[in-house]
Length: 215
Image (cartoon, rainbow, N blue to C red):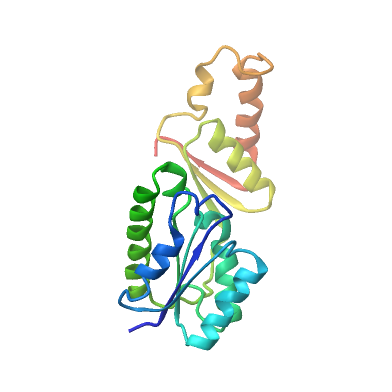
């Protein structure tokens, strides 16, 4: 079984005001698989990161759960902590107890109960995590653009102008999409044809673009 470390962030008052982090720390201390648990004011800070590094070393942890804010903010931060501690970066789970818990609760009992469930879920998921490693694979430097509306046309032109081959596929007999049906376009109020026609011509003549209609 993995030796899992759980680190609960206060996020200042963002989490602590509606989640009893001290009680969670005590309750989860004996949860199966948890070898170490601690809470700290700001886990993403340098002292917070060092707390995790020290715990990994001293308690021989091989999996980490950080109960904090959204992983979109600091998942990469904590992955770096694991890598610097010679752990695979994918032996990490972020339990989002801020956006998905403390920020949507006013009652500390409800907030604490929900946070407990979120953290337990992250622990159970981490138990099944496998280490992942980056691999290199050959890539064909060619793009497929599906749909010949104005977005597809512009995307195809941008890619082709960058020197890459583009294949555009359009199911209708001609490109242009819904824009071709408009009388005016925002914000210049130009006619749609005034903007669209030059792009359609440029696409049809571009040496790096192959267009397939009725496809």
